[in-house]
Length: 81
Image 1 (cartoon, helix red, strand yellow):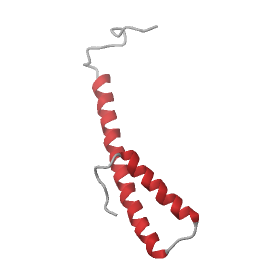
Image 2 (tube, rainbow, N blue to C red):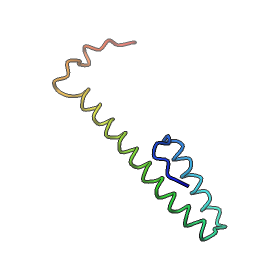
Image 3 (cartoon, rainbow, N blue to C red):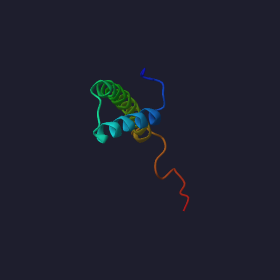
Image 4 (cartoon, rainbow, N blue to C red):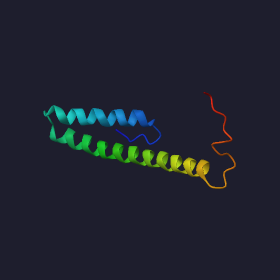
């Protein structure tokens, strides 16, 4: 099975969970297990990379909106309550 680099994160993570459940069943075929293990490593790397991208975006946004030269302060933002 080819690694789908552009597949949604949730789809990749779900497939990784399915592979994990397959190994947990305990009735493992060695050849199939090796293929699933390799696929699992590829999926884990893709998920880890995507999570890193998201973390970087969050940190960038946080930095952008909490910088000292930001014009908006908490006093400038109207409260809803």
